[in-house]
Image (cartoon, rainbow, N blue to C red):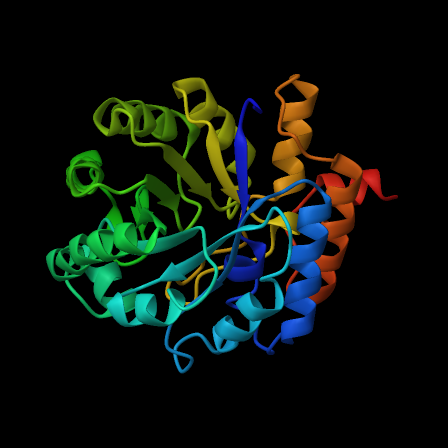
Length: 295
């Protein structure tokens, strides 16, 4: 048992905003390198409409290609029940249902109100339990919205309460546009953990303003032990103007290892995965440690 769990989202969140399609075999290679570094929980793709997110048009192909990878616990993001019907045909450990803390972002992202989306999620939980697939409910723009500005804590906490009562296996709190500060993260995550009780909670951080690591450490101090990151800091949300890359997995692992916090990961092999992820990205990856360690 490790001290923390890291879920790498680079094959999905890391590549979804790329202007040019990344071939399926290269996504497969990235997942292979992540596994070699010791990562098992990997958000591998998403079942969204290919017209909205063309990079994920090969979702079925990716999961077919990695279905024989030992130890892989694959997660697929889904925005609705139609996405789940496609996803459930594959070997998955978990589906990640993404909603939002604000109505405007929810409409821009998935074309539904929060309540409309949540009613679908309640149906999903029942079906997924029958299918033996775990569910995560992730709350986007939990700290700030590109359309509505700052988000009240109660907007997030009300959703957390509803998600817990619906029977989700995990709850995700996302700083989608990288606007959070450590004090804000500490306040919100403390209250989230109090409400979520026995339901595991993950935090998903973007490093838009260079505060990703500080925010992760603040979350750790409140008791959060699950972190969603992407090697090389690649990524961004196509529906969130100004959102930069994710917190780099290797940066967070470096911090934890220096603090003697066990991640169960091989740092050198993680750098190999980060190098490969950077080669797939057309943007400037945000990961910092890779540039220092690989000089």
